[in-house]
Image (cartoon, rainbow, N blue to C red; front, side):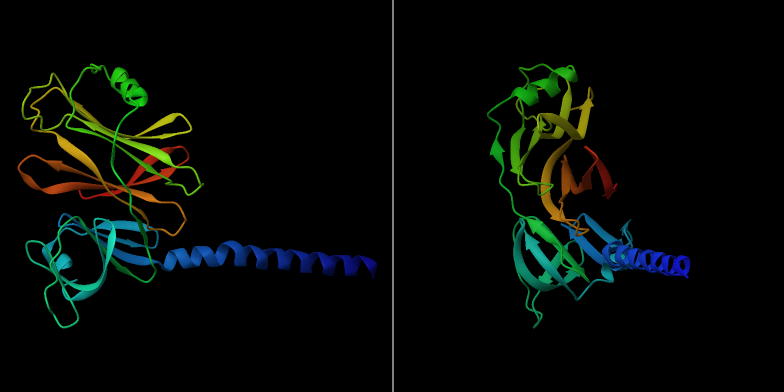
Length: 259
């Protein structure tokens, strides 16, 4: 009889354990699996995120299917409000009465069944060249090189209370000199370690490069850690390259790109 009671208690404990595990992890996974959003990155990218998968919308029919749908709109990472969008050669904004809403700056908009956090940040000139010089040296580039981008951003990407440093260094599109090599580097420094995000070194024509810039930090998958939206512009080509990165296990991986 005693063995039977022990057996019953053991079964109850196992059942309770699985119920708790489901409540802690199962519901969260179900919730994540049901998340769906569409993100507009300027006039260059339309991305969908559903069931933890990304898709790049390229054809005109798919893109224009969002005409007159409502999006949460940000310009230069500042909330502009909820507006209806319409696409022709670019995205246009309209209010509920279909009055056109003018805007200037980098457009970022989304619609979905859950909120996305989009953060603001500030660009600053690089003062301490320690990590920049280390990256240049590792890639065989002269430390006396001139730059067309030389900026850094302080931002707490993983929300641990300590800001990481992001560096953007490039000599793409130099107008008044011809460099020996064309280069672009975007990297993060965390606890003294350099994590490369984007790097390109080319011995070819200096107008063939792509000049990188940070478009946004945003938490798309609700894991309380930000993704990095990095873009780069090409000379005389209107459509920029957009790349979304996530920092995991001490390194950056690309989630999606419009290329």
